[in-house]
Length: 210
Image 1 (cartoon, helix red, strand yellow):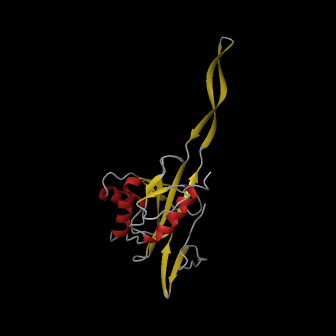
Image 2: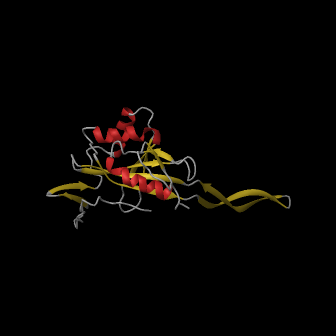
């Protein structure tokens, strides 16, 4: 998985305090970002997007890692409108996509032992069996968005395909975040995700994806 954490013209300064943060330096200007420090909660942002973008299907994806940064999954059909809302809403103004990441989630088989009743030599007996459940894998495009205007973020926006083969289309967010152009093209080349609306994805889609 290839990830661009911060654009090359930014510098990340680590904090040694109990309240970790990221400071981005643009020339002589410094911007401070707390860890998901927003005026509104992610639940409130989700509710407002749903009200502003009719038909949008949004889901909060929890994160149990030490980062503890939940993300917002949006359906591809409404991703562009949701991103436009995040950028243009005066209370949010997420105007900068710091990085775009492609993720390939493989098919997964989980095994669970269950107790069932069966007839054994004519006698009903409780026996233990192993049941396998297959979960179909999928691909994701993950965007980390910040507000330069309000110095807040990140909010993490996800798009997800139905599976790892077809269809593997999501919406390009380059009409909103021009800086995502090259990174979406990289994801297309590495994972085969087709970004509908991207002006120049190039060739060789998915050649390196297993």
